[in-house]
Image 1 (spheres, each protein chain N blue to C red):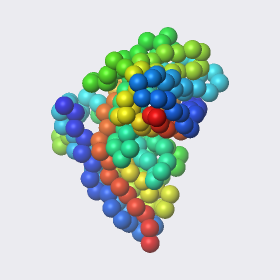
Image 2 (image 1 turned 90 degrees about the vertical axis):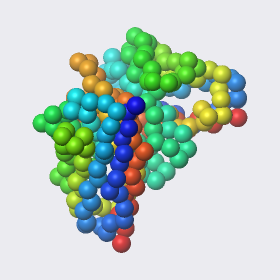
Image 3 (image 1 turned 180 degrees about the vertical axis):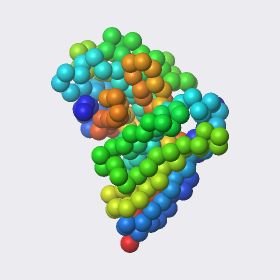
Image 4 (image 1 turned 120 degrees about the vertical axis):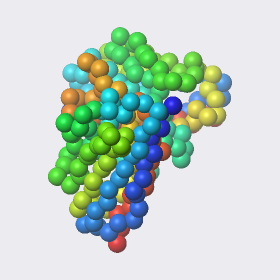
Length: 121
Length: 111
């Protein structure tokens, strides 16, 4: 059974930093692209960042480009999101998710339980 | 970048059927999408991948009551024999080489 367990969320002041982690188990982590998706309170889902299976390719939403960095450690089966220069609008539940990718498409097919990030003074 | 349009809300009676719609932006009628369910207070759950042909592949453990279909730029999620636990937000998703896009979601109320 695929399990994704996020951690590292919490309260941080505007301009501060936070690093999220996602511990993966139940599947061959190194074979899957991964992603972070967030959900602001009362709002819909918003894709944040993605990373290839090897970690060699990374992708970012315009809203976080230059401030967030996605990475992974395949030896530890763990995905990370380093978040710098945080803003109030980054307040959200952050979900880790696996990406199923084929030649013609790529979509999220397993989700973690999420970790809450609150940016406030 | 693709845009996915969903109605903000829908409602149907217990035991009936409902068809939710996700509309792809102009020029993207050949896109594959995914449907996700998010029950209140829970994480999203992958329901199915849906192709422009109407062919779909469901996630593990998704009941037979859930099915998909397509027509042009529209992608549909049909839920038959509605149960109380089907009351949730439903999101469609698509992908464009380096970005992923979600629709705004449809809040389904089971009456």
